[in-house]
Length: 314
Length: 314
Image (cartoon, rainbow over all chains, first blue to last red; front, side, top):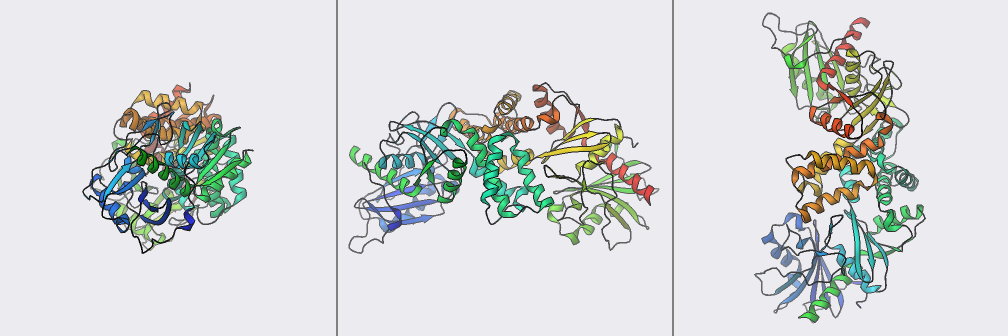
C-alpha cells in the first residue's frame, strides 16, 4: 500500500543530493506536471504548458527535459508518466487496458529516447467496449485513491473537462461513463452567444434551481440555454447568476443521466476543489452524500504505485 | 397579401433606370444581404460579411452604403432592414414587440444617417416573457410566410444557429421557443475533442438511430457525445457517420423537448435546405409530416410586407 502524499508540503531539493530517485509525470492535453520523488516523497514540482495537444511525437522528449533536467543524475532516471502522452497523437501510444480490470494493472510502454539519462514508462489508459468509452490519466488517480483506500467499493467521480463516473469494486474498474460537461461549459461560456451573459460571480440559489430544473426535464437543455441569453436581455439576469445557472443546467443533466452510477452508492469525488464542491452540492440536493479526495494526491499516489510495481518487475 | 418572391430569377438592373424603388436588407450577426426591389420584384442582390457582430454602432451606415450605393438615386431611398441591426449591440436598438402579437405589427426605428440618400427603418424583433425568449429576423420570415399563406394555423419551425419553434394562429405569434442546437453543433464540431471525429460525409442510418436514441433518453447527451469520440478511437467510427450522429443526437434532443410544439400540429419548416431536410427526416421518423418553405423567399416577402405597411403609414 502506498500512503497518500500531501503535495502541499513540497520542499526544495536539498543541496547535498540534487537528483531525484524517480520522477512522476502527469501529461495532459494542455499541460505537463512533473514531481521529483526522493525517499518516497515528492520533494519538488515543475510544470509546463507543453501539453500533448501542442506537441508532435518527436517533441515530447525535449519538452520533458525542459521540465525535469535539474533533477537528473548521471545514470538513467526512471520517469513514470500517465495521461495523454500515451494517446495515439501523443509520444507513443500506450494501448488501453479493457475493463473490467485493475486501474493500472499493466506495465505501459517505453518510448525511445535519445538522452541516456531518461528511462520513461508511459502508463496505459482504460477502454470500455460497450458503451464505447476511454480514459487516460484518471485511471492513475483511481489507482492512487485505492492505494490509500484499498477496500473501497463504490463510485469514483472525477469532475473535469471530461467528467468520469467510475464503478470500482474489489480493486477493479467495473465500468465507467464519460460526460463532456466541462468541455461543453467552457465552449458555451467562451464561444457561444452565452459569452455575453456569463461572467464573474456565482449564485448558489441559481445553481440549485438549475440543477433541479435539469434533473426534472433534462431534454430541454438547448432551450434553457438560450433562455439564459433571453433573460439577460429582457430581465437583467446577472452574470454570476447566469454562470451558476449554466453550470447547474449542465451538471444537473449529467446527474440525471448518471443516476444509475450514484443512486444508493458510496461516492467519492476526485478533482479540482471548485468543481468538486459544485458536484457535491448538486448531489446533496438530490439526497446523495459524496466524500471528496484531493486530485493531486491521488495522481501522485497512483504514479508512486505504478513506479513501485515497475521496480518490482525490473 | 404580398405574393411570394422567387429569388432564383434575379435579373441585373436595367440600364434605363439604375436605382431601386426601395431596398430590402436582412442584417444578421455574421453577414448582410440586400436586395433592390423594382416594380414589386427583387431585381438585384448584394451581400457583405459586415454582420452585426463585427460592426460598432457608427459603422453600420458605411457598411450599408458599401452594399447598396449602386442602387441609390438622388432622393432618399427607403431601406427596410430586419435582424440584428436592431439588437442592443446593433445600429440602433429596435425594442421588441411582445407576443402574442402579429410577427411584424409595429413600425420599427429609424437610425440617424449622415447620407441624405438613405431613409432606413429597422424592424423590431419579438420577445416572450415566460419562458424568456427573443428573436430578431425570424419574425420577418414568419410574416413573409403568412403573407403567402394568410390562413395558416400551426407551427413554423426555423432551423438555424438558434432554431425557433413558433406557434402561429390567427395571424399572430402565440408563443415560441429557441433551441441553441445549431450553435452547439458548430461548437462541438470545430472546438471540442469531437473535431477529431467528425468531417466530410453523412450517414442517414446513423442520423436516424441517433435521433431515436436522443428522443428516447435525451438526458444522456453529454455521455453519448463522448461515446462518438470513443467509438472513433476504439471502433473506427467514420467521420461521416460521426457527423450524422452528432447532428441526430442534438436534433433528437431538441425534438424531445419541443414535442408540445409539433405533436399533432401542422408544421412548416423554413430554413436552409440541408438543415430543413435533416429536421424533416427526424420529424418523419417520429411520425410527423412537415411542409417546407424557402427561407429567402420568406425573408423577401416579409420585408416587402413591412415596406408596404410603412408606405401606407407615411
